[in-house]
Image (cartoon, rainbow, N blue to C red; front, side, top):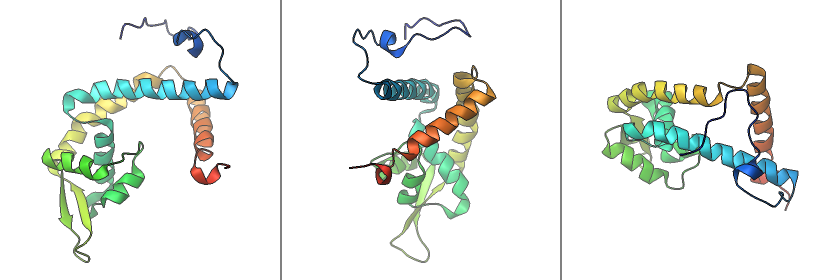
Length: 172
């Protein structure tokens, strides 16, 4: 990326200038939405670049964290999918890739053999031990210029925006 870094504390250029767009946005809503999408994409790219040397994607990392939290019980693919931060349309294939890397294993449920549970392995836990500090430091670096109050305000605004993005809350 050949983008010049701005000095800390300087005001960022607006999205219109950043995109070299000569025409104004159609509405303030459109500008806010596009800012949200652009920011999310750039932050995800930064995290992607940090995880790349470890051979896992952001969604695989998220899945491993979910499975670590599930403990020895494990979870079905559907349960993993509903807990992911970013939805993956093919969670089964994602789990298969993690299994090929030795980071998870799958087994049939003891009570219901139709249920397949995915559990994290020692290799998966080791990968998280390697990557947790990388992810934590990346996230901190990306947002360290914001105060605690600004972070809380941003969290509140994003949660409110996400609430109304749910299909059940949309008119139509």
